[in-house]
Length: 634
Image 1 (cartoon, helix red, strand yellow):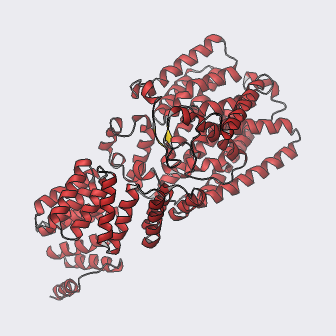
Image 2 (image 1 turned 90 degrees about the vertical axis):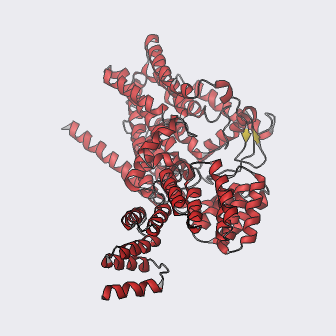
Image 3 (image 1 turned 180 degrees about the horizontal axis):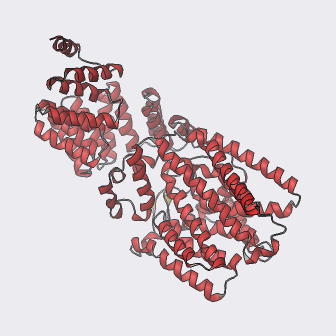
């Protein structure tokens, strides 16, 4: 009877995690693709059909993130690029991670090293730590930022490995160690920060499981062997990885090398700690200047604060083991992204997602120890969780809309040209070309050598019919970067609109030389061939476009138009239906399908398709409407 009661309680606790998680993340569930989502998801052919997935292993994207990419491919397979499905998976992973934090905390609480504290530390204290993790706003970037499924998935496998390993050490069943090994391998193929997993296993062994030396050594050897997966796929090129130098994406004009990157991380880590304590003023893209010397006051003060925290954690080892564990966990799990391995952006909030687990576990234990009265402890925790929930709900509102999201970034980082560029893209996607133009101009004002901003502004000028200014911007972009694919593609499109077909072909050919897999350039060149009355060559280009992007609606429609011109109406109907299946609101495909049916003498279907095009406000040819009506009367 007692066992059943405990199961009911745990089920209710799990239901609360799910319900609260859905509630506070609901505002972001229809949030758009942003930033790296464009490259990792929206324009990534590898996730759009299964036979392309193998390219991850020798393409531009490391195979060490294969499992997240596989999950993106499954998302695409079931609901194409509908963002809700992607968000639902990300939230589900976060909910699972919350339960794993709860499970790991419970295993630690009942470990040998903590056994003497069980009476003073109730079983539900790990659950409180899990709720802190669930509701803290600092976790939002790892959940609402779709491409950071890399971070949330590696956290899932990281925590699962530790839970299964702890179960093995406590119960001795081989199934647990086998499961831990499988989970560890999955972690290695999710994100490179998993390389710290052997050290985390050793930390939890030494802190709570009180292993004999032989047992600790066995665990260390086993998981260290698995961790060799990561250096293997980097060809064991430690020297090149540890000597990366690149321009900073976090502050204009900064150039990062391992030395100043490490110095900057002292301030970055303290920023994460401040946000854990007081999650106010969160930002997606921080304007974060690099530190130039250890003796800068801000750098030195932050270093001393971190050293003090680390010393405090070590001093807690004997009497307050879980507090010590949480602090050491925080530094350990940050060690890959916040050390000397230079990354283009010095700070991103999602990097604190896994490290925060130890802090939340330690905090819940610390409060339980310092506030022995259950009523006061419970009341305080409820206030904290409710406050965090409100802040997370508000933060997720920012993620709900592209313009709102990037407006928040430019408000907090007004000196970042990249922020204004992305705000311009958001405005353009929303159909607000005037605001997009202003944003691109602001980006150019901050960085006069920003090729992408010139190219994007040129697109807006082209849409507005100002071809002279558009051409000047495309030329400037190419002058700044003579291998800039989009600039050549956009200028080729402009020349095509101006019926300067020879110049258009030269630019589109150049674009395809830069990237032979660029579907948009194949589509545009096919359109030029069609205007030149060269349907066979147009057909070949449209086929290449859908080969490299099987979800390319316009290319299917254009290929169908070629088949219409070649009088192969059955094949044309197939292509128009493919386009409509991918985007039921794509009016040109309905209109062209109507014409194909008309030529096939299937007049009822032709009329139905025409009506759909009209309902979608497509500018139909009045002469064709009359012709179809007359044909139906006969």
